[in-house]
View 1 (cartoon, rainbow, N blue to C red):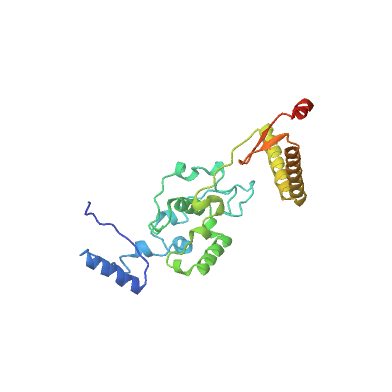
View 2: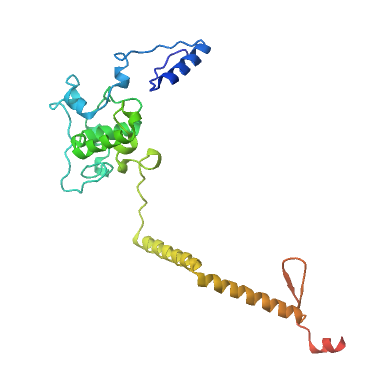
Amino acid sequence: MSNEGTKLSLFVNEEQKETILSLFGYYNWDVNELNDEQATCVNESTQTDEILENDDNANEDTEVNRFVIQQNEDRDECPFCLCKPCITDESNIQMWWETEGQQRHRRNNSLRKEKYKYFWTMLYHRDVWRDDRYQERKLQALARDPKFKNFIWHKRDIMPNCGKGKNGRKTKTPPRYTRDEIQRIKLEESRLKEKQLLKKNPEFGNMAESVMENALLNIMTEALNEEFNITARPRFIALPKRTASAKSQK
């Protein structure tokens, strides 16, 4: 087992802190607590306005050196990521990383998921951060989840819906079909809907009951006429019809 230490940032109350320290003390483990200044890189806010206005030492955030990807005004704006075209469009794939290498900002908190970091950067280089609608989403996210106030972000509310699917995964592109395949799929779907509607129709249930009653009645009638025998098992064994000569012999 490796003895190399690992930094871990926790946001806990006083009771939880005492419980964790008691656990470490029970196993004689060492705990190194960092003060506010030492933990700045881990717990410092990631507000976009602070990064854009106050971080003069970071060259990538200055107006002179900041790389900007212009929006395509001829394309429709995505209502989720506020980009033209949508940030998931094929024309935006790998545009930033192919142009220039870029290190993640030290304030890009380690608690964020990798995919969110990439979207975070791509939106920044399209000036979406400065959009009033984007800022409003952040305020709404903080209002609904105060426990995340130290991180100034909430993945489910701030990350565009077009960039995530279930469990935060990117939505897959639907398969492409030919025109004939599309027509066949639509035909099958319409047939399936008709069957489902028919089963829900009360007249269909009444008709099915009538058919079963008539079938049982016919079976019992034929059994009384000795045209077949009824066994103890849930099935019927058909016998040939008796001829007139056989009846006379009996």
